[in-house]
Image 1: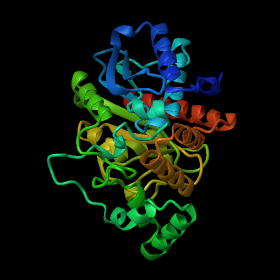
Image 2: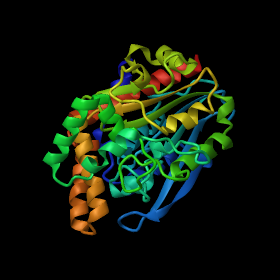
Image 3: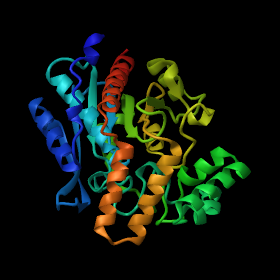
Image 4: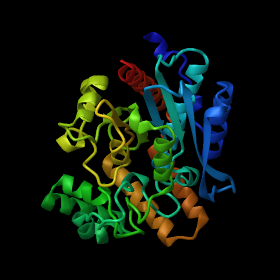
Length: 363
């Protein structure tokens, strides 16, 4: 048990998407599993003209009945946490600190939204939030009435007036309505935050291809999606968006214990949301599987909203690269604090949850 927390190295946190990808690929090469490596090019280029790619690697028996899937950078800038956790896991596998049980395997998916990761934004190059994109685009889009009522306040340039408008809304309709209005997902406003898009995004297409390619709908799955920016500072909350009475929620509680929280039961720092990537995976899961979001808190939800809304204003209204670059550093400070204690807490919790997933799915 003590080995799980041995040799924590916060230097596994990369300085950029380009560095993260290079280091991730180096660790994969060291494990001699390059034959199981897949690359999924993404449209666009990074800030230094670098190619943008989502990479995946299968570790272990290709016929394994049980698979732990670790996703990173569903929200681009949150990929710093995703990369650190995956690079640390690859290093742990290379030195034997982590062993994959018989009949089990690990599938790592690195940088699901590489454009946002490279440009230090949460969305992709079209402003689409991958974690609101898992809807049926052949049907009428879900409506978010709270967003429509809040839109004028969301785009209010004066931060104090915006905060007051939000406070007034919460007083009238409740805090949950405020949070769902801002972050629950919307499909009517491409310029706005938490926009789910009008077609499947790159990261969704990658997930669908991996599910098909590896026949994941026929295997027992433990999916862990690594996120940051919401909840208490340094704490890794296991958020389960399965219905509280579903087999998936029961599996999550069995594997991860009483620390599991459920937005639909009102026990999570996250409110229920539309179009989550979870739902795509839920549809491909056996009843013995589950999907959880491992969310690492940083600063307050109000700070999160202020940082993200300012990001959308800067990108929508300013062609000034210096202003965008300055704001990107504020984004980075919110989603991946540089403090070593925060980064150590993140690595410890990722190791713990992956160990729980490997044990649970392999039982």
